[in-house]
Amino acid sequence: AIAWGSLGTEARMASFQTLVAQAQAQAATDTPLKQQRLALFTRGVWDYMVAGRNLYLQHTSASQPPAELWANKLVTSANGDPTSAHITYAAAGQDAYFYTMGRERATRPLTVSVAHDAQYLYIKFDEQLNPNTLVNAHDLASGDCWELYLARRRSGPYQRLVFAPQGDFLTFQYGVENQYSRLVPARVVSDTTSTTHWTVSVAIPLRQFLLDGDLKTGWVVYMNALRCTANKEIYALRAAPQGLRDTGNLMPLWLDN
Image (tube, rainbow, N blue to C red; front, side, top):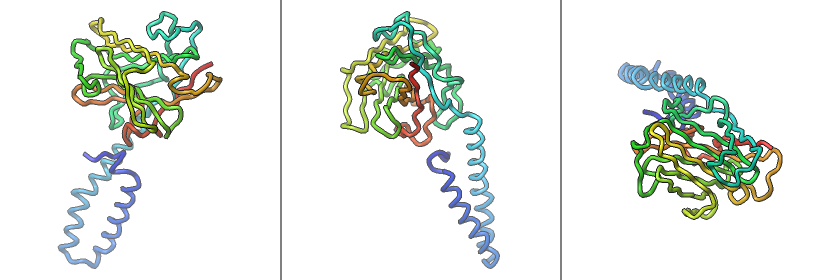
């Protein structure tokens, strides 16, 4: 299948359309054999490409992800405890559905919730499933996992965090010296005790991770959340047709003050 977001793009389809139009204009003086070949190509290839592109545009226009997210400020600080009873989460944007990489709305029951207390950013990932079905992998990312992409600004350095069912996590840093370590200040609790939910609660120290200073009114960071399965399915809060490392596609996350 053609990846309409990266291969069959609007610019390329316009270029192809110009070539097809030129061929059709020249066909009037071509031999009957060349005219037949052009007609076969048009009916058997080009018309299907145009229909496929139009269908892709219909799906993407009907399934737009939320434009921005809001993290409410807690009345009482949770002091970096991601499971604190003081945390009152706000859903990560209205109609914050997950999407496949093809920008189809996901049918898996996935949610992400966010909050902050000016010191920590709190994020809770949840999926309705039996945790006994989850697969842990030695490298974390090739098994079932949640992933979080965080950046101070779009198209700049960003951090990728990978959370596994057993509670282990990795942090990767891109845009500066490419490095990763398990020894990061984030606090992570993976809860697989329920028979109907897998929940991962995360507390990320804002100053060390993102902000380089005190939290001020109107601070915004950028994020995306992914649920990756052991059988290589990927679901994203913000679909990434140009690839997961396209930080220009990250969603603004406003930190309410």
